[in-house]
Length: 491
Image (cartoon, rainbow, N blue to C red):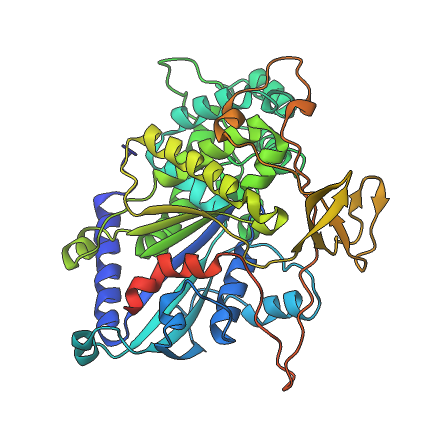
């Protein structure tokens, strides 16, 4: 089981916040939905499309409250947390619909409240329920979620695990410069700010190289070294793992002592406030993953994604909430792990993407020894940027997808200008996802990997209705995600 992440004092503050949320929920029923994702998985796009489809009557056949006509009105309302930046929905949807560009990725926490008026399907509930549900969407970077396991690790454990991981596979090359500096460092020498900064910079550069598109690795804590924000240059972010001798303790005033103190400061200043003020108050959670990109990069990226999901799921305690559980520690009673960009595949491969993601999650759940109740998996596309077609080749129908590649995208040596559409054969995912978990033998080439074309397409062009109103954003399975995440709260 995952280690304990909070102290008794933290638990008391969390219990007080949860009790306040519970009291507020008696007047205005609310679901706090956490939205996060791992490395370019499309959190901003997911939230924007979800809200746009609810506000504009999108096609949502699997979202029962809308399909049955029980939702009478949907509106944006002021969020309850004035100290949290608002999710700028209007700017993001303008980028998607008008400019046809993908909005900027999440770099900090933000929040948005959308409220639905509905008629309960139960006559008994109609007597006691106001027929109104507010969904507070809390958007935060996946790097912050991957930091939570640090709360259960001391500096020695963090250093040993991080250095061991850095010597595996492609990481061994990416970490070469940082590890050379780390091994050369005199950990018992006097604390030196310039040495600490050099080590921290080299460590951050290694993490950034792991995250780059050509690697697409996922296990990258501490996350704020990638997204420093207003803490850039602070001592709490100027630290790195060290090679520590077994059983030894640091000398007073040494580099080791400095790094250990700053690691603990990172947990106190960065990680604990996020856990206490935001994560511990969530009711539902969706974790978006770019499994297709990881698969395209090969077995090592898939294995790293599995490792990240193991760390992520270890932070959750799925289970049914009650008044008692809200006092002792709120439970996130539903977690959805969603593989995005399903529109980059023909629908015949959607089930295979779903199976790959489910295999990732099942293996992660087995590793941490938790039950899978309350956890679901699906493949989706928050915004469908392509359509399907077929072309004749050698007398056979070949399934293809059609879309507008981003400006500068190159396919088969042809560079696109961002205006012209094209059809591509997206490739096939393997029928057996287990084949992607086997490490590539030494000397084997990338030609043995599944041949999947990952192309960056522009958002689709949306036609206007007679009244000049843009149609809702097209999607794949977004309605099914809504039904799982909060459909039961509208019963």
